[in-house]
Length: 167
Image (cartoon, rainbow, N blue to C red; front, side, top):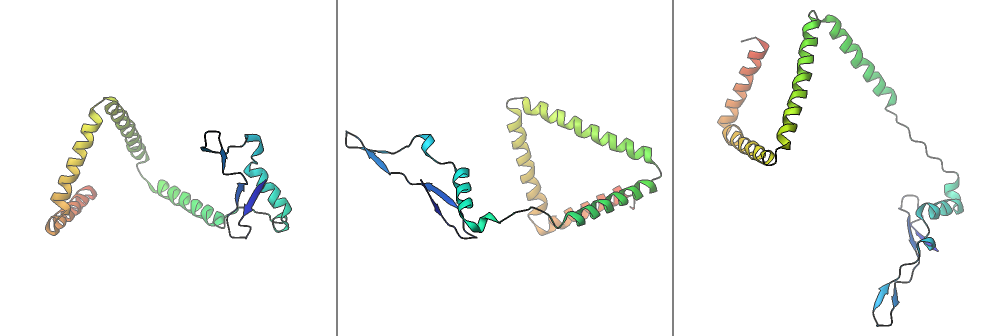
């Protein structure tokens, strides 16, 4: 037989079988009582019996829905329309496709190289140490002091201008 605790609407349902705590042995020691598996009620059976016996839960129907379904579909449509307008406005579509394909090949190739490096037994740990060392140097060189942070910001701005071609 099972005992059900927490029958309130906002409380948690806990099902605990009523079992004796220990069994005495001939040697005087106490062993925990483990009943046969068939005599322990499963949670789903106990919960089903509880909900059928309680009239509050018999008429309760739960339906999962999202109020954001319509807004998210509108946002997705807007994004696709924006992308289509930008694609139509491009003059050199072939170069964009060429650069995109080159980027995909570069990502695939770097994945292959990293996988090969990762398969060498000691090399991944050495690469981690190199990465940690470079990160420590970068923090010390550019992020620790105010003047070096300003220098990093000016370097980034000049790089942006070079990339954009406004310099």
